[in-house]
Image (tube, rainbow, N blue to C red; front, side, top):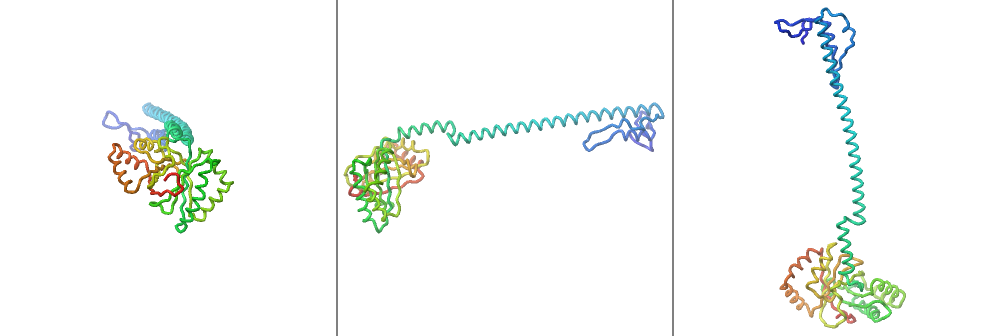
Length: 349
């Protein structure tokens, strides 16, 4: 459709286009309004459209154009409404889904967090229950608690300390009313110098409570305080024996002792116990319960350092020893070895 000289021209089969009056062009051009949204609106009630046409063909063309544009406009309006409605529903559905998903996620996360804090995962809880049972019934002997008293003495006061320590530890070990026995007392000769280890055996935790309560209200407490001026520091750790490594009874065999201390990675104690039970029979073996946790102690006795070296070299010839050493390195964060000399009043010497 083309406007030429104020006339509306439509293509025709002949060589010349059909020409229409200018007012038809104006009405047709005003019949469609292009909105920013792309919606086409047809103006059906423009007053000029009701003027009598000059001929029947002009009138038919105008009405036909109005009908086409009206159909087109209604189609677009309906399509736009459907799109808007669909978008609204999709948006609402998305919001609901997100909200629901968020609630489910938050509830799940909260449940997981609470469960993890209180119990851990079901698998970890089941494994933990087994470990607790094994710790209390299999790994630990359970009958006794051993207190590791470690004293770091001023280098200039070692002799005075030894005398004061003997006055205390030698006296409590012979008192039948105290629920405690002295396993041994040692001085470090290789390792942390001027350090003394005292291992006391209590009749479980109740025995420890009774013993410490009685000592505080007796003359033993004054004997204990006599050591204080010679100390740089002291520490106490409560440990239990491994079930398969009961502490050796008091004996006098001479020689030296080696105390090996292993700081284990948390969660490896059971594997440690299963690895070591196949090979060794030390004088004593303990794992910590109160104080520095995840520590294991092995106490060995040798005639001298040369015998220690030869014994350890022979161990490499045993089947599976190399694997045990490799697992020890894997389970441990760090380890220490102290060469100890027993004090004269030590039951183990």
